[in-house]
Image (cartoon, rainbow, N blue to C red; front, side, top):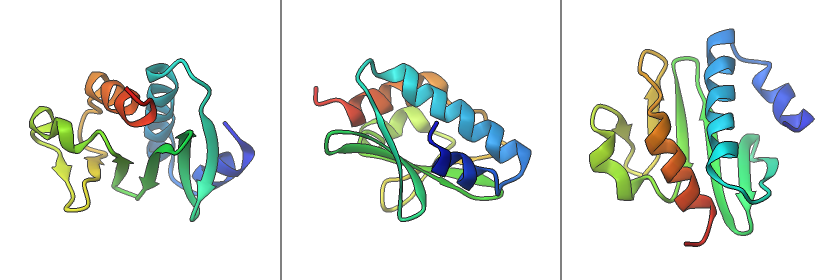
Length: 111
């Protein structure tokens, strides 16, 4: 993980950092292509070409911005999908790892 993202996440509590790292690893596992990491508007963002996944950290949840989310809303029952199509995962909720890997693959790779 790049230093700028490490510094950014270090400002959060241990639970948020742990959950961020878990989701970050899911992003890495979901595609075989090289992913560019950077802070975009101070938000951890992961790119493959023009495609991206963005993680937005809060003290009680993490929002995930990815174009593949809306196509999988039915599989994300129990999780909030914002009007802008972001997935909100509360820290009191399990992380839906398998569906996220599919969303990340569809969002980062032109299929």
